Length: 371
Ligand code: SF4
Image 1: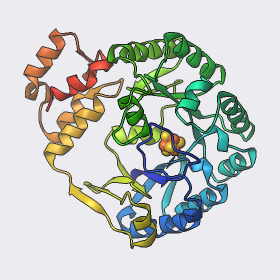
Image 2: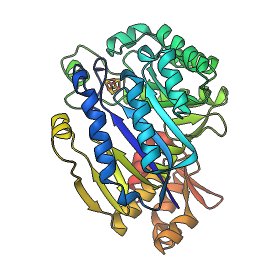
Image 3: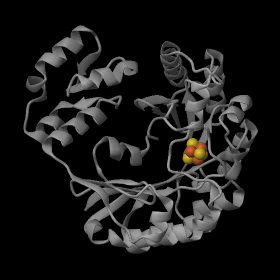
């Protein structure tokens, strides 16, 4: 049976972080019950597409899935297990924010098969968390980690942001040490993105917040990489680090161009060679019959581009043999000129039949050479 990933989007949050451009809402709690009904309705529409496929990983993301009553999470997982083939040892992750983790919720998550928790921390500095309008402080985070461990979770990720206003090298060192002290298995370190339409963008434009320079952000990323390595966290994707054997299977499936179904508001899918997405409008999701949007059949060209772009983000790099087999072409001959140029500039290397990026901070530029 073909393995696929299932993503379930929960778009509710306690409050909106100033940098957030995700499909998430606060103050719409009255729609939660209906939203979960619609999720089930949507999943039933995909039943024939999932025939002959096994769900090998489930990722409940958001939004803040820990914000909603755990009984909704329990019910939706039970529904998935009853209606579809779910692999026995499937990786099942849930995203949470520290302030909305309770022992009761964590015990329900554990009981319904969730075996990986991803905690959004972003910074250990309380002033920065306040500035970002995060709904928690650092002690809430420490309490949440304790609660999760008490409930029996041992595979725990934490998200942090790199390139925050006023972030220093000392902050990075303290952050990595503090997270390592918590005994986490996985750390995701994302660069802060300033998205149009966010309060952060407005605050930067009006001079209320000063961003750090591009060079400083690159230096902080490199420092994060070195510090994480020191504490035994190996990079396996540009922003993702883990203790040996704790790579996120769900995300690896995306990066390896595996199939996945995304359900819920704004969720994105790649199934049976077709990309499609859902509405981003909550009222439409709640009130209109389910409809796939922007359906696009994959072409050889888009498949190749995606293969290259995703594979080069991985620490192990692009598997030349896999590319050649998938597309019936010889990568080294097709991109001879580009490879020569990038190798001469020491930006890539070839190791064990893989193309590997040497400088992840210029990965976008390197990847663009192949298009
Ligand atoms: S918790 Fe996440 S989804 Fe919710 S507002 Fe903050 S960044 Fe956005």
